[in-house]
Picture 1 (spheres, rainbow, N blue to C red):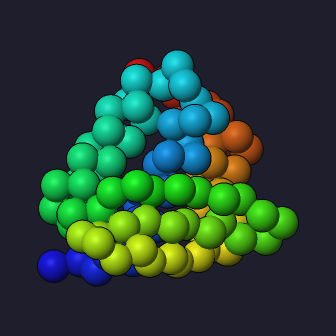
Picture 2 (cartoon, rainbow, N blue to C red):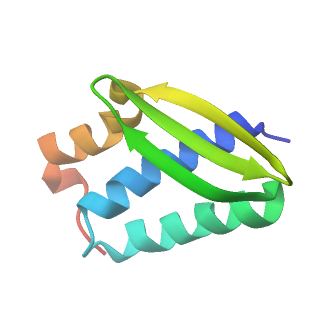
Length: 93
């Protein structure tokens, strides 16, 4: 079983892509899949994302506990950056 940290990392990475490529149906569907997974498989709710200079800070609830985690911007944004550098490899479907 993957960790909550891994699930949030994957969710945030595709969230960033889906928000930047709102017309990309595959990105939207993948985001919905990961969002459902966070809620249904991990019991995560009330997710808030704050983007600061060099980090994404994520606050979320599991049950009645509030937790936080963080990821470096370059770790999360690298996939979107690659898509922007080589758009011919990442067509919208």
